[in-house]
Length: 322
Ligand code: BYC
Image (cartoon, rainbow, N blue to C red):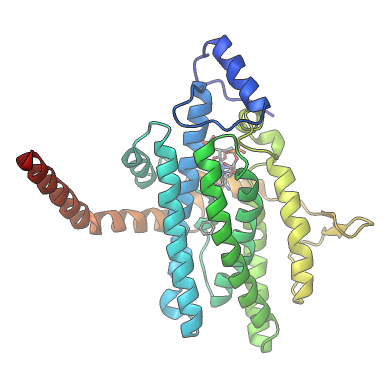
């Protein structure tokens, strides 16, 4: 793994004490001393995660008005609303590290922050909503169940709640897929097409392969991450292949093979050029996503102004009464 030497060194005695706490399995809390690099890594990763939840509302929100039944519409609205909650929750967690969320949101809006590559792909059919729940939330669960044991307390606690909700999301997605897969030939073709388009981008969600992951060394040493990108990707593949088989869908990888136990699946080469292009802002929907977030920010200005005016009046009233 390569490393990123971009933060000045901390007092070595304090670092040794901190690392002993980590080795001991202790939870690090906001007021505890922490190396500057630990803080920076957490702000980076948590803010990207919060942005992903917020941008992640867009591909699915696109289908709320076109859901095929009232029941599907209700569960999709609930899911998208949950993602907003996750984003706000994780922004709060990030603020415990001494950063202002406005700064983070500004970085998202001006295109200097990253968010998950997966949300730069379009949702072309109703089946995409099922596949997002099944693959994207499924991948999120694999990743975030482990993050629920991360060394930073506020992040770990946020992940416990988030994972409970992601489980519901995954089930609703898999159920949509299983209904379509056992439906008419046209429905089955629609869900197979969605699987074909979302499979490889879902594997990319876990990040670059371990040898190209500059942040993993820090994150694993400090037990923010507990498993590497490749280990979690493998876990996701092992869980998902049998689920696809159970509903009669195929995954678009001619190199998928199981070992003798039938539980460990090897898979083909990921197109890393595509991944890095999407992360660099050149995916199919990067520009649309940022435009939609900026439009929402501008259209919501009057709400923020009203809330601030209300808070100022309240402060005046309290000061007047004192
Ligand atoms: N997309 O050193 P690496 C959700 C960047 S939300 C874009 O391996 P790290 C959901 C990475 O940031 C899902 N960028 O990084 C929401 C780094 O760039 P910088 C989001 C990516 O942090 C709504 C560079 O590549 N989940 O589930 O060790 C609806 C090198 O990577 C991606 C989280 O955020 C990517 N896929 O590992 C439904 C979970 N991958 O910052 C569902 C928390 C990597 O050095 N995050 N990059 O410029 C993590 O677990 C880790 O940050 C990652 C990456 C595994 C994603």
